Image 1 (cartoon, helix red, strand yellow):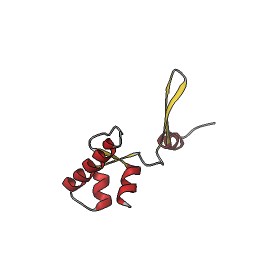
Image 2 (cartoon, helix red, strand yellow; image 1 turned 120 degrees about the vertical axis):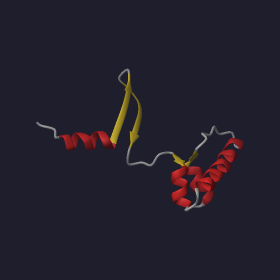
Image 3 (cartoon, one colour; image 1 turned 30 degrees about the vertical axis):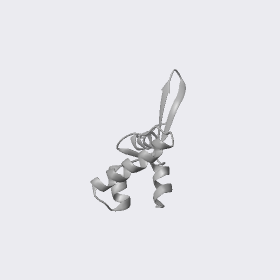
Image 4 (cartoon, one colour; image 1 turned 45 degrees about the horizontal axis):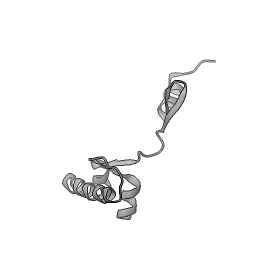
Length: 87
């Protein structure tokens, strides 16, 4: 049975498995959106400038920090973004 490069590429592109000591640690499914939004994503969703996008992201991250969550600068939780902005 011969596996073509296209089939191999498709399989590798859709599911990436990282294994450590023969144990599956993490699985990334390329079909699912990432859990965080970056400035470019916020800009596209809200049709705003980069400065406005960063200001909104900082505000949302401050709210999450007040609730006790750990945040990453330059990223905002996709779930919280949609929840707060009703997009």
